[in-house]
Image (cartoon, rainbow over all chains, first blue to last red):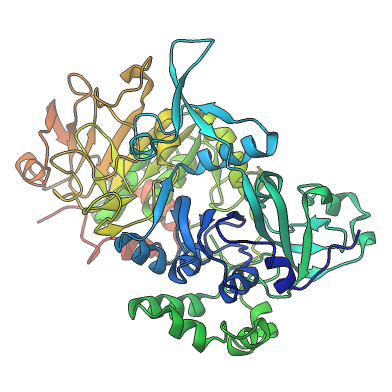
Length: 291
Length: 269
């Protein structure tokens, strides 16, 4: 089965009102080219589930988000994501603020097709008081109260990987694949962008196959976009773009996301965008961060 | 190497690093996570001196046999990896309870509840949106936690409850059914003025040592809630020369000097 398609075709699977999951973590390995494609589409009223970075900030700024399920939204070296912050401070967003681990459990519940997973996480905090839809339950085995983390069933997931083949076998060669395997498994339809499109033979070595974290059956569309994680990182290929994030944050100061989109060609195409940020070679030379 | 002489010249940041390292002294084989440069140096100092059994990550995706320096490393430098420890696996460790986090909340209340989520306004429209609750809820109900507070004042140590309660504390009104305070493990808070814990009567907060040159009155004036003090309240231990040596090796570029405004000396005049 050939799952290769262009970004526009892939993103067309996302319809108004859908729940979408976004892989990556903060400013790290986010499917930003797919997000930019989504910004160019007319889709609205999305529920977004993510370990958020600029993906969440941009979708908020563009008015695409009806509801956000989050534990944090951050660019790491810029701790507070500027457009997410504005959206919250303007009271625009419906939110479900949960613990990072609760999100993992919710994705697992969806992947495993169970309605919830019991946990102690969140008990005693405002996660309980501010999420009236999350139930506390009794256990058949002890006398304690447990939080029933509901399945985070996703219509579509967007994930950026290092390499993929046309059949949807995905390699994440970065040090961490984050929760991307669970985003892939929790979704009915998973769209993957990859820096490099490779032949299936590439995986015929055990150490490479060990970096494939979900089966190709959980990948439904493959989009080949070298540099597609920019301005987030795609280790080991390139780091995140500090100066670009600074420009992005500066545009938030002016409360002017459309100026940012215009300045960097986001309104027109990924080709224009990459030109405006200095070209693919410049992206691929961005140094990896040292933690 | 073992120079246990106390230092005569040291910064407040170094005093706080050494005081915070004490949080991990008796932990044994737990994963210590210091969020931020000074907390990370504190954990690294503990692992490099009195608790070599500790576990630490590279703050990215690997458990290390010995801590990485916090400055002067280059991308691609070889590091002493022990095992992979990506974020999903971190939670396996968190929920096992074998972890001790040293975190820097924006608000802490008398119950030891903490906030990094949002400040002021309403929940729907906060005045200042911060990070979100991150891992605080799960950390606080799963394992030991200590707090690192670089600026001890009434905006951090609030009079009432935190604006958003991101981590569980010793609040009887929020204690989940079937749980006891003894299951919640808040260790110490290291501030720029003192070290505190929640070891008072009924898990109430108290000062356990004052930094050199700081009075109890100054601490109380800068705390929004009632604060006890242990009997025979003493001074926070002065760093030893050996500790300062280790810290200098862990932070060769002296980034620790940039963490507190004006890098004040450890002994206030």
